[in-house]
Image (tube, rainbow, N blue to C red; front, side):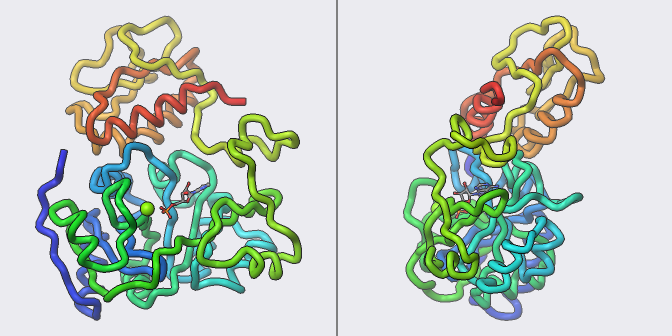
Length: 329
Ligand code: AMP
Ligand code: MG
């Protein structure tokens, strides 16, 4: 499952920026410096590219990723701002603040990048190399830290090379970045919530908001005393239709989420989708949330899901399938 790519290393500059934009446009992976740590970038609107990113990092789960854009105008095309979130963006962007907002109508960011959620984490980074690449590419870029999952976040191009050489297309070397403090994440959905403390101090945000930030208790979604709007804090996507895992047969009224060349017999073609007919796990990951959403609208009694091997991206696919099978509250 280890991709065997030639990883180019370019010093930051005009040529590297153009090369990075080309690689992103071709669905490839580029590591570049941000003001927090080196990020591993992929076209946020291309599910295959995002699936490759998860594979390169060896992530065992699909956590929703942050979409990076060059400026507030670009952010407003993919997320819905209200008066408060607009004030935060105007005060702190570009910089180490990530806002979690409702997705804009027609938001082109792939479901895999948001792990199927209807909310989107978005940030305008300040680092000049990140800025140049985002402007040259012109589309949102997901960019988690450029390291193998479980390793420390990289602060130099050499760190990135040590972890990801042979697994990504390009590393843009912009020199060492300031110590790896991640961005502060604030959800602006109902009451503003501090989801992750980070590089931007909480007090600065509270001053601009004129109110205190709440920290969600662990797993607010499960048993919040005052439920917010449904699904707003849910940390994972789940269809409304029940999901039945490891299906070996098909029951009456069920839709089928198949995997591999031999889908279960007896399925109604209109209610069947295949994650990958060739058993390709990168393709399966790219299709996962879109297929679930589609089958959720089929009016089926349940979605029967064929087994997916628990190797490579299969581990993350199975993690999300198990969460999708937990009944919605
Ligand atoms: P990283 O890219 O490694 O800095 O991590 C991204 C962080 O953003 C993770 O902690 C995610 O759980 C969080 N995140 C991204 N999108 C969302 C979202 N829609 N709702 C809540 N948290 C999010
Ligand atoms: Mg990380």
